[in-house]
Image 1 (cartoon, rainbow, N blue to C red):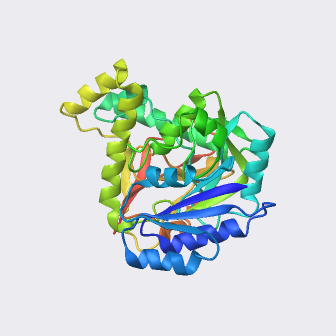
Image 2 (cartoon, rainbow, N blue to C red):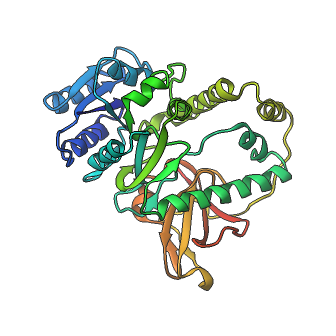
Length: 367
């Protein structure tokens, strides 16, 4: 039996879709689905109970206890060896859950597995693998001056290379980190790692902390590309974008302090961040203003046999979603365009075969 946990926060309409994707799975036994509501909203709670009360267990919290604590509630009162964590704005595609479970059953040292992640239903954009924060990256890739701006660009190219290795493979690949938004966990591995989530992380980085502990406990992490999920990233709680950014920043600091607080590179990075920063002038950015329809990019002839169009919320393209294609024009997919979060958008175009790329991006503003 698989226990599936979905935590809701003002995303009840998405939760129904996520639950339905699990009920229609090809697993030999349907998962035991738990939905925990953190919304502090009677309308959200009533919607979940009326739509899902007959097919899964709905738990209504009187206050928002945080993502990690909500998951722990269910983990601690269930016994199954397999635990699926699924974000409300994500859904598993046909057969994905059984593929992940079968892989873990055959590989007892696999502590957690994740699927390949699509951003849109049309399978145009792929979301990147999850980078593992470390103190050297914090020190060397913060683009506060010209030297580190170049290092930040090189880091993004390296991560582009890593992403392509996942997006273009047909075989399971060992990873250093995964996304907690769609992952199958082995309870034995979680227990040996000290339990599910550290509740000091209210939102974000609780999964990064867990996966690091799982690896330290002697288990491996894998992406299994035969399994796929659609995750309309940042689809939840768009009216609280600033709050989410603040929570991410706080949790990022907590993670670094917990695991690398005494590391020389981390201490140096903190000192440099505290000081004045110089204006950096790279990459070269072409501003598209506020376009009303998806932009079209001309592809140089030498890239027509295979290109990669990347999207990111920052100009250094780290991390970035990727759209692989061929031909002399790269059109930003309309479906992905419709689910872009508000704010500045950045795009980079280059050959899917080359490592080095021109220092060039495009940007536009979405309201």
